[in-house]
Amino acid sequence: MSTALAVEILSALNTLLQFARANGVSSRKVLDEYLAARAEGRELSMADIEDLKRQARAALDRLNAVTSNR
Amino acid sequence: MPRTEYRVARQAVQLAGAVLLLCLLAAGAAALPGCSLVQPQKDIAVLCAQINDRNAGVTCVKAGYAAVRDLALLTEQRYTQGRISLATAKAALRTLEEANRAVEIAEVAVALGAYSDAEARLDAVIALLDRLEATL
Image 1 (spheres, one colour):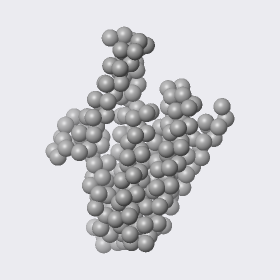
Image 2 (cartoon, rainbow over the protein chains, first blue to last red; image 1 turned 120 degrees about the vertical axis):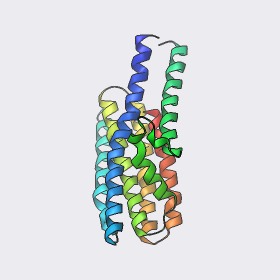
Image 3 (cartoon, one colour; image 1 turned 45 degrees about the horizontal axis):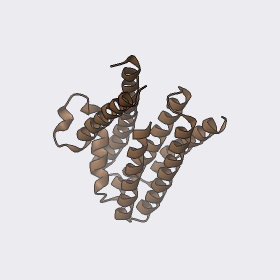
Image 4 (cartoon, chains in turn green, cyan; image 1 turned 135 degrees about the horizontal axis):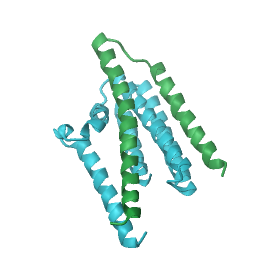
């Protein structure tokens, strides 16, 4: 197996793991908030969504800016 | 890199993806090494496959926006590191915008109490993001 192939494989695996790790942390946090609300008998409001919605929009705008500058 | 080696590399990546998918789907697979990484996503997927109330709906919409954010950040990182081309990054952005719109529609459905509509929209989001992840 050539070095280039090994690098290609490791790079791709790293991408999968990076996303699994990053999104795993996000998912854990969202799930913990759900479980806490359920344990307290509290209803989550639509306003609880706003922060993540804003973060998603900001990340998309940033990606757009980075890819539009080239 | 020669064509054969590309094919082998691609197969290896597909295998890794299949392992992660197995972690997500197979009952009991969470005990396998590495599967703990995707356990929270698996729990979210179970919750979002059957949205029964407002709390589950809000949680699934939040998970949708979090996935869009995380993949946008990963795409930016991969592009600035020179690991994906400008064309791939732009295609990823278009897919992410589409996924984000679907999450927004799911959000409206949850607000209206139309949970089965929200489930369908979120299924579409998952399909889009899975496809995108494989291209990064």
